[in-house]
Image (cartoon, rainbow, N blue to C red; front, side, top):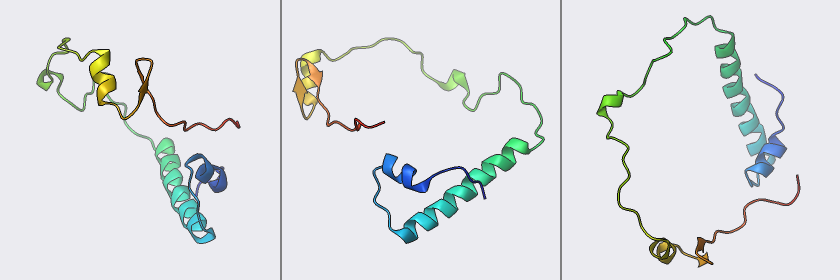
Length: 96
């Protein structure tokens, strides 16, 4: 199992309120996942070509500008807006 993470800190960052049982379960599961990543990092894998692609780029449409919505139309669609910008709830705490 991989070590080096603080499940309480991770839960706080994710804004999760976990029971002691959930903390133990998730810490174990996360440790297993991180352990697999450590094993992969140590594996002697063959080098891959620099140009290896998952998606054939010829199957993608060309990236050309198209019609756009104006500021008024976009802010009208948003749940809340102010001064021509979309307003969202604050999600970042002041503490570091």
